[in-house]
Image 1: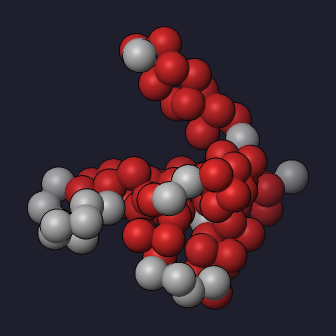
Image 2: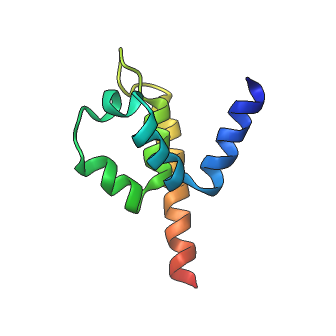
Length: 90
């Protein structure tokens, strides 16, 4: 199981949009997290894939996002900003 988790982490690091699209197609969690809306996850896939992945991983059905979960979402925001800064620098 540890190997599977490491493979998913590597996939998220190198291809977050692919992971999100696969989660959209094959995961039941997608509907739980986004509540059937289409616009926010679609904008997340296009503009902020790391933040969207972190939100999906941190979201809890009982409490939503609370406490230390905000750290992971902040890390996703930081990764997205770094990605966009790198694109703008080239």
